[in-house]
Image (tube, rainbow, N blue to C red):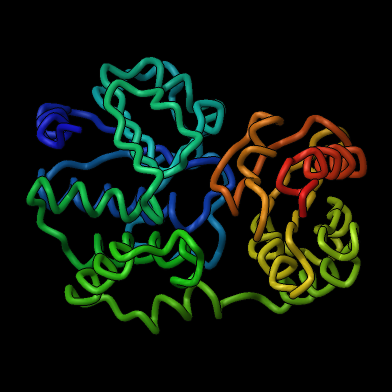
Length: 325
């Protein structure tokens, strides 16, 4: 893929928009802020940063994140010279932002999900990478961009969180190499770790303990899942990012091979977060229009939480690897 084309299109664009995905995590937010920071430092240009959901409180420390605006604040009729999507695995993950994407004179897609079908005019999709932050840092290095401390903090956060603090299977040599290079610019690993993983509110901790306490176990404890209703979230005042990390906690149980969380969005709409040790959960989620990675994926199902859980269980049990397990 020609990095020079990306460099040239940014140089020639007068107005730029960077889009992060729905229910943002550390990778999409870190990549968005990292790209914004790098464009600012290397081209002396401002870019707009678009959010589709509220920023989880643990990521409010990211440089420039306070300047990001929700989709509702945007003029949908505006035509940008360039729109850059970061960590958006599928076109429909842009939701209403797709209007701005379609109107743009040029579009770029930077991602690492294997389910990404390269939907932009210029695509940098590397499934072998640990994170979009890793992909982005590699591109910046290849283009010879200056990497400031603000850019480094953002990209380090992206890599740290999408590798689960460098413990997930997607953690390769480059993740460690790039993290080391980012640390050499002044990033403090212990500081970023504390902000990402040790800044939870009392309400969130209590809520997650409640969710784990009502987990359901199936197939000789090989499947673990928990169904979370809006009334539970409201009762604990837990916030939008309340289910972050729950599926990983269930997967960590020694008997668990597959774990998933069903979060109620509305009466007949449920969000699924899946984690696995055995089956390809991206394949399971793709059946419902979602996707992700082999061991970490998600989707949204048009069904009540209880029905959504049943549908996911059915698809897990259909998997050939599961039948042989």
